Amino acid sequence: MIPSGIDVAGMVKRIREDILHIDIPIQHALQNINLYLFLGEYPALIDTGPYHPLLEGIIVEALRFAGIEGLAFIYLTHSHIDHSGMAARMRRMTGAKVATHRYERPRVEHVDERLREEYACYSSMSARMGFPEEIASQIFNLASVWISLSEPCPVDIRLGGGERVRAGDHELEVVHTPGHTAGHVCYYLAREGLLFSGDHLMRTITPNPELYCPPWRGNMTGLTQFLDSLRLLEDYDVRHAYPGHGRAVHKVQKRIEMNLVHHERRLAKTREAVDKGCRTVWEVALRLFPQVRNKPPDVDHFLALKEALGHLLILEEQGAVQRGNEGELWVFTTT
Ligand SMILES: [Zn+2]
Ligand SMILES: [Zn+2]
Image 1 (cartoon, rainbow, N blue to C red):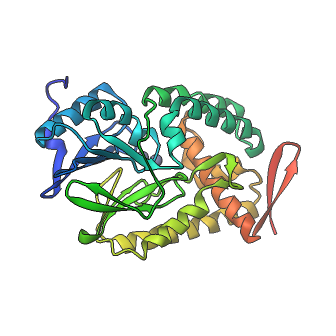
Image 2: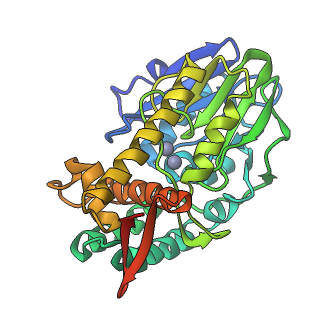
């Protein structure tokens, strides 16, 4: 099932005696995907990675390496395919019940329909954001690629945040941390001060805020929620955070503070960009992320656009910029 030469044992590390970290390298800027396996009475996996036959083989081997035949639970941090694409497959193979926040359920259960709808909606917003058609059309056609890396998965347990769930011989508190997606959750092992933080808190990068399309509860961006969700973690005694990508975070409160400062600076840069004459979301995106300017169209262009929009909308809410219309186009000016 796995080509020879792949060292699965080398991908499995031990965080605690009964908690394993499966570290899967990927050819992407994110560099790796982290899954966490709890051993004990209720064997459980946090996140599954995307659907891919090679990855499936790695997870099966990792379970065998850990001496596990089935799983009681699969806990998803959120519905992005790099975390949930393999959930249906693993559910069938291991008999696990799949748990995710109720807001993530539609995208987990109907990933193909939802991604097509979302990408069509993004595409329809391009003109408003001044996003060039030739870039938008290439990027928004990628929905079919994401769909091929996932499979719709029935959700057995809908989480809401605040409840305690079983993993191995532990109880984890579900912490609702919206922003990167509406139903992103972290799983907190209070007794040990460990937080399994998905894409919410990572060691070297900050996650992209969700672009809600169509707007969700009146919001287009998840950025405000994301910043609130970061502040929420300041109330937890987290000693180590284990993210969905990258290495563990050990100075957790410092990392939270750094992320908050980072967004303050980006807000200031966004305002400065508008001040200096960037009028559209895309013009601001290019000012904030000049490195995308000369790249062939890829997902980084869209991530830059979402970041710019998120910060512009916060500034609009604060009254620091205002949004007008020129035909279809949104035009921003400082107040
Ligand atoms: Zn994500
Ligand atoms: Zn991710």
